[in-house]
Amino acid sequence: MKVLVACEFSGTIRDAFTKPGHTAWSCDLLPSETPGNHYQCDVREILNDNWDLIIAHPACTYLTNSGVCWLHSDCSRWVKLFEAAEFFKLFLNHKCPKICVENPIMHKYGKQLIGVSQTQVIQPYQFGHLERKATCLWLKGLPELQPTKDVKAEMLKLPKNKQQRLHYLSPSPDRAKIRSRTFKGIAEAMATQWNN
Image 1 (tube, one colour):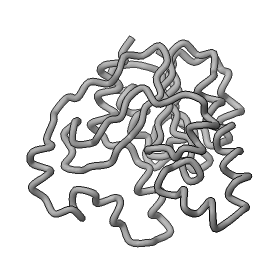
Image 2 (cartoon, rainbow, N blue to C red; image 1 turned 90 degrees about the vertical axis):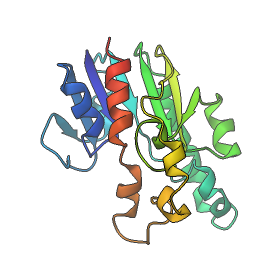
Image 3 (spheres, rainbow, N blue to C red; image 1 turned 90 degrees about the horizontal axis):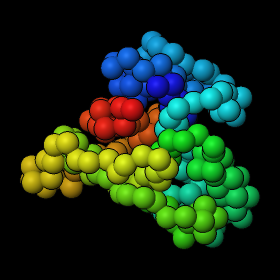
C-alpha cells in the first residue's frame, strides 16, 4: 500500500508500515526524527497524491477536552478552534478509501464542529505499554484496532504519575512533541491489522 502518516515527525507509524514492505511516508512541518521517507511541508501539498491509506494526527491543542477551559478565558482561541476543526475535517472527509484520524478526547464544541463521534477509544496499556492515555480514532474503511497485549492490571499497580507519565510532564519547549508521539505498540498493531 501507499501510506501517508500525516502530521507525524517521529516516524513511528511510518516505520511500522515500511517494515512489512509498504511504501509509507510521514509528513510534518518539522523534520523527521528518524531516517526514512518524509515530506517536510504542509500536508495539504501532498494530501491528494492517491494514497491507499491515510493515518492523520491533526493538532489537538484547540480541540481537546483538557484545553476547553482556555476557550472561555482567551477569545482568540475560538478562531483557532474553527481552523483546527476545518483541518481535522480535511482528513475525515477525504476521498481516500481507508482513513484513520487520531486525537485525544474532544470537547463538546469540537465534537459539534467535527459532526461525528469517534469510532473507538484505545489506551496504550492495551498494546503493551504501562501507561494510560485515552486516544480516539475516527475510522473509515478500516476495522477497529484490536488490543494486542493488555497490561492494565500491571499498569494499575504503578503510582498515578507513572500511569499518566505524559500528563504529568513538566512544562518545557518539547512537552507537546513528547506528548504527541505514537506508542510503538499501537503503531505495530495498525501496521499488522490494517495490512491490506
